[in-house]
Amino acid sequence: MEIYLISLAIAIIGGLMLSRLTKLINLPAVTAYLVAGLLLGPFVIGAFGIPGIGFNSMEHVEGLGIITKLALGFIAFTIGNEFRLSQLKTFGSKAITIGILQAVVTTLLVDVILIALHFMFPEMISIPAAITLGAIASATAPAATLMVVRQYKADGPLTKLLLLVVAIDDAVGLLLVSASFGIASALSNGSISVIGVVVEPIIEIVLSLLLGSLMGVLLDFVEQFFHSRSKRMAISVAFVLLTVGISMIKFNIGPVHCGFSLLLVCMMTGTVFCNVCSTSEELMSRIESWTVPINILFFVISGAELDLNILSNPITLVVGVIYIIARSAGKYYGAFSSCKITKCSNSITENLGITLLPQAGVALGMAITAATLPDGSLVRNVVLFAVLIYELVGPALTKMSLMRAGEINPEGRTSARKENEPKKPVDVK
Image 1: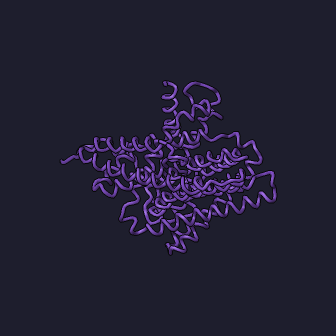
Image 2 (image 1 turned 60 degrees about the vertical axis):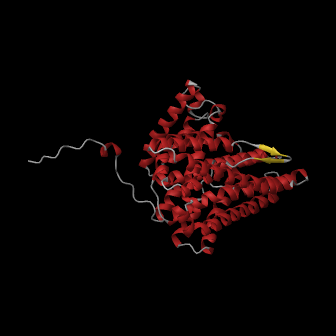
Image 3 (image 1 turned 180 degrees about the vertical axis):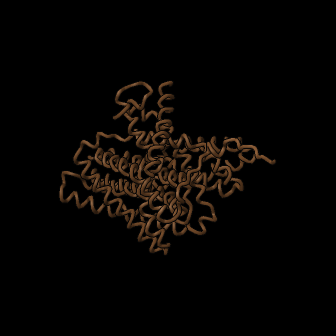
């Protein structure tokens, strides 16, 4: 236990210290945390095997999975804050249209390009793997996007629309992956499961929305028994922990495998709570500040999870580069065309697609479902390679796009240390 505590402390300190260096070259702190994870991971500092100094093995990193799920829960809960009725009246229909269209365009474009690659080089990638990768390409990482928005206090039409689209993207991606994986399995095994392709993903989304709604209403009810800010924040944190725990439960109803989407459940909890609780705005800001160390750990652990062995496989690299180019084009032009259809401003139309490039844990989770395919390992390795690139480059591109849209103000030189220094007494003589 002491080894885990020491390694977690060093992970937070290492991420924070490295963020001071990335600030000098105007890179987001998220990038620093991911690089710190890579350096502390099993392939660099962790490889020396010094107890507590870095993560000594992949098993060590995987043992911290509960922190990753907890951080995702808080991130999703916070994103739910963007689904206030006032926001939905302004951006709701546009966000839904863009969220669906950009995901579908990305999936179709990646499918077409990777299937074409199969016909040119059949030994490189199979059609089932190509179809599965196309669906996984639709997923966007909400965590990196939210962290960039928080760090630079981004605000404006693009930022508000972006957070809504990222949230909707999770539900759309879940449906696309389930349907595509069902088709891929049918091509591999010669049979298709209607339950797996249609019924199970719909049930998962419905159950997630119902559970999230229930938890949001319960949180509002219980929160009313407390009046101090600290106790209200404590009960909110407890409810997020409870929601994350329940959302990890899986069960069967006859032949149907049932479960919940952690992101959807926590987003819905935050959405319902923010719309029924009149004091939710202040409470949300307090939770955001409380979760800063957890979010740092999330990205450091994410960096440590990246398996650098994939860089030694030429097939993974070739397919990975093609996947990255195709997905990036799909995200950009999918968002561009859907913004044109919904008559968004030029600022949103030209910049939204780039902000949707980050990809991380959600995509890796989707890639795990491909393990039963004949070349499921290729799917996982390609996604790992793409995540490595996107997580290192994506936050900087998101920052660049938000700055270009005029929604990030130039960074000041304010210091909390100086602001809190005792003020000199005023000489009244």
